Length: 309
Image (tube, rainbow, N blue to C red; front, side, top):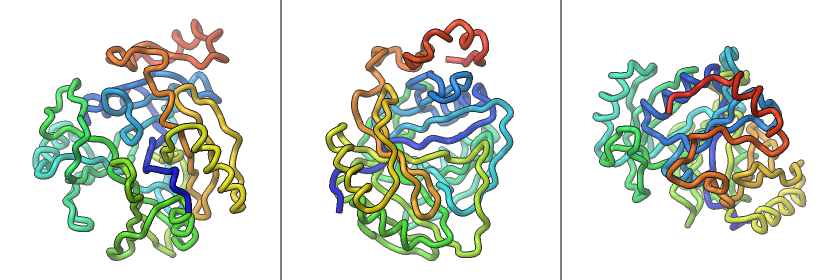
């Protein structure tokens, strides 16, 4: 069993409009845009990162907004819901706030004894805010008060037809089975970061997901550094997984592999961080380009949608 993985690093999804996406995460949820860059493989598409003040691993929601992309179809083989942590007792305040912005899909439930506010993003993205005691410092620069602001990720739900092999993988990655409630089984990394929870939601008759706007593209797990990442990569290869070489993503290093349930996993380093090319006070303001795309700057700056700061 691995001990290097400490919980979530980031979650990356697809969107259909960069301006709408930016407004939702900064204005509605009150997160900070910590990086404005482009997709390494499609530089005419933004890669937008939202999180806390510094973009701490475990707080980072990221998006590829492909303009006018068709919506995905929810189903098995994907991350079905991304869950953020908010302070205990703030569900009512969040319901009121989200209703003010006419956010779709508003509902409430309780899972494993924790109150949750359920809601959808601009492309039908599926989210929840869970009341949870969490001592992480929130970002409050976008007008959401500290007493209710998002602290970062709490967990992610994976929708699967068969959870057995994915559960085995999670346990190999250092997660331990915590509890079961109906079709959902919870796994937690002991001693991990504050985003150390995965819920497997199993429905054998679910139709397969179809990726598109609103779908999660991949989910990333955090390791401290490249040395720990290489240990994880070697262990996964030894277990029979097809793992990519290490890829430099400027703000972290990444490896990717496909899980038995169909979900794309990434293992990302906590280093070097989002302040490697911008000071913390100005994160997410300037367009930052990977070195191989710097020669395209003039064209990209004229093509990409302007975003409100």
